[in-house]
Length: 307
Image 1: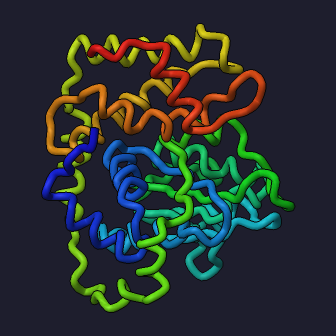
Image 2: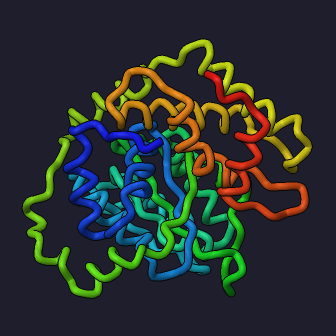
C-alpha cells in the first residue's frame, strides 16, 4: 500500500529529487535514517548517484558538510585529526580532521584499510572521537553517509561486521526509470534554481529527531516486530540473527518512517517499508545468496501480519 508523506517533508524530498531524479523512496529512506539518529551505507555501482544524494541532502537540509575520499593510503589521523605541539604557545593544539562536521560523506569507504575504517567506530556510535587520550565531542546532530563499491571490484576491503552494524540501514540506488532518465538527459532539473531549496533549520531538525523517538508502538506492533527479530535468530536461514543493536535500529527506523508519514504510531506497512534496508547488511543467508527482496520474502512469509 502506498503511503502518503507528511506535507512538511514533501518540499525537502522534492528539492533533493531535482538532483536524484525518480528516487523518492531512496531519499525518504535517507531522511528517515537521519531522523532516527542513524547513518546510511550506500552500496551500488559507480555513477548511479550515491555521492549526488549525499551532497544534495546536506545542501537541502542546511548542514555543514565534510567529505573524505577513502583510499588505501588514508590514515586514521586524516579522518580524526591530530594534536601537535605549538612552540609559540608552548602547548598542544588540536588540528581537527574532516570528521568534525554535521554531515560526513565517507566516499568509497571500502577502498581504505580496515584500520582506517575503524577510525569511524567511536564517532558513529558515541558522536565523539578520542585523540591522544582526550575525548572530543562532534557537532550535533552528526550524520554519516558511507558509499562503497561492490566487493568484487579490485582494490576494495570488506567492511567488518562491527563497522557495518554502525549503519542503521544500507541500500542501493539503482538505475533510474526510463522517464526519469529522459529528464536527466534533457537537463530539465538543472533549470530549477538551487536558491529555491527549502531548509528545516537546526532547531526544527532537533525537534523532529526527538519526535521520531517518541512514536508509539502498540503491543500488537511490538509482537509483530519481535516475531521478525526472533525469526532471524531461530529460522536457521541466516548465519546469525539480528543483534540487539540491529533490533534497536529496526525499531528506530520504524518509528522514524511513521513520523515521516505524519503519524504518532507505527503500522505493519511502516515495518515492511524499512525492514530490507535495515537488515540487508546485517543478515546473510547460510548459503550466501542475499538480496533485499529475498530478505523481505523470507521475513514476511514466515511471520504474522495481523498487527
